[in-house]
Amino acid sequence: MSKVMTRQEIEAEIIKKAWEDDKFRQELLANPKATLTKMFNVDFPEELKFEIHEESPTRMHLVLPAKPDMSGSRELSDNDLEAVSGGTGGGTMKCGGGGGGGGGGGMTSTPPKCR
Image (cartoon, rainbow, N blue to C red; front, side, top):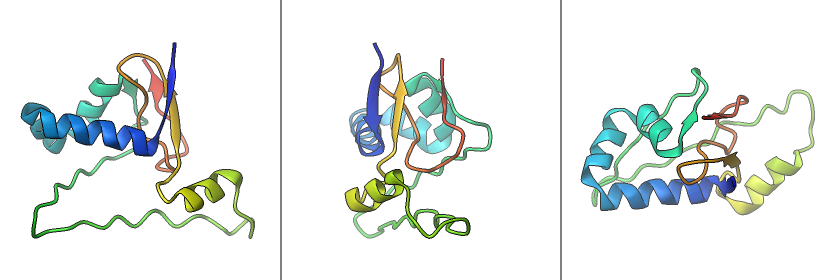
């Protein structure tokens, strides 16, 4: 049976594995897309790029989400409202296999394909 995971749950799972498994962390830093494809057993869209940044005690990273396209409408969709109110991107992905999904949160208009 497939499990639906939020972007926050997906990120937490990736971080947990990276903290527990140094080899995985090195692979994630060197080749994030291939590592996440293997971890979640999904095919991400070719146009989707991943950038992994590792913080240190003296270096902090801030991610600015993509600005929503408001040209066609002044109203936010239900998904946009959920993302804003939840503060985490709010995306979900449904996928079978290796523990969930990947991506979500408005990173691409083409969702990953389950293998």
